[in-house]
Length: 415
Image 1 (tube, rainbow, N blue to C red):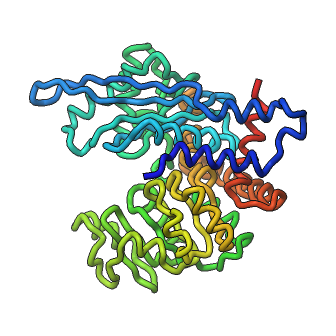
Image 2: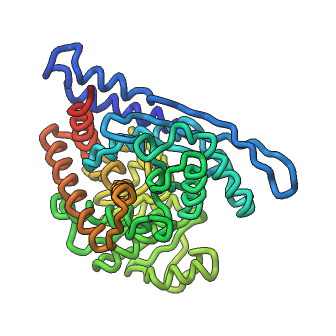
C-alpha cells in the first residue's frame, strides 16, 4: 500500500510548484516558512497502553496522537481503531485535517489519533479499558483549548463518552468539550451522525451545475458504513438514483436505482449486500469503473490509483473518504476532464459539526438539528464556490484550489 503521508506531501509539493507563493514577499517569505512548517507535524506522540484482558493476562497496545498544526486553533481530529493503523497514516490524516478546518473556515487546527487494534476481537469491557487507557496516556496533551479528538473508523459515541469521563476524572474538567462525537445524552450535537454525508450533499449541490452534472444524477457509492449509507439515503431522497453501492466484501448494481431503505434492512438481516432482490452482484473493482454521473468513494484511502484511474467512467468524483485518490490518479482524472471534489472540502461537514458541538459544550448550549444544518449549509456552499473560483483562477483542479484557499487562511494567522 502507498504511504499515505508521502501522498499528502506530494499534494503539498504540487501546489507549491504550481503557485509561486514567494513572489509576493521575497524568496525567504512567510509562504516558504509556512510550507516548511507544514512538512512535519508539531508533535508525533506514541504511547503504550497496558490493558488487563478478561482472561487476566496483560496486553500492550500501541496508541498514537499526531498534533499537526494549531495555527488556527486547538488540534482537532478523530481517533481510529484498526489493525492496520500506523503512524504515517495518522500523520497524513492529521495534515489533511489542518487543511479541512482551514478550507471551511473554522478556528481549529489539525490532529489525528489511533490505536493499532482489531476492536472486533475485544469484549466491551476490554474496549472500555483500552479507551480509558488511551485517555490516561494522553491526558496531559488533550484539552478543550489544546486538543479535541473525535470518532473515526471503528470508534463510537460510547467510546467518546469513556474518554471524556476518564479525562474528567483526571483533570476535573466537566464541560465535555475535550472530545466531540459524544451521544446526545453526554453533550453531543444533533445532526452529528449524518453530518459528513449531509455536508457532502451540500458541497455537491453547490457545484452540481458548475461542473455540468445533470439535474438527476446516477450515483455510485463505495462504502456502506455510516457515511456511505447516509449519503446514499440523502441522494435518493433528493431525487437522484443510486445505481451501485458496496461494502468491504463487494457490491450490487441496478441501472434503475436501488431502494436504499430496503437495502439497509436487508443488510441488517443478512449481514451482506449480495443477492439483494432486483440487483446483480459486482466487485469493488467493477463498482469503481461503473459508468455514472457521480462516483462517491466513502470507504478507505488509495482506492482510485494509477492502475484504475484511466478506467473511471464517472463524470465527477465526490471524495467522502479521506485520501481515496492518489496524486498520480488525480492527474489522470484531470486530463480526462473528470473533476474530483476533494476530501478536504467534500467530507468537511463532519469536522464542522464537531466544531459546533465544541462550541455548544463551552457555552453550555444545545442546538436543534435544524439550527445545526442551517449553520452548516451556507458555510460549505460558500467554501465550495470559493474553491471553484481559486481553481479556475489558477487553471488547476479543485484539490489544488482547496489547498490554495487553506494555505492562504493559515498564513493569515501564522505568527
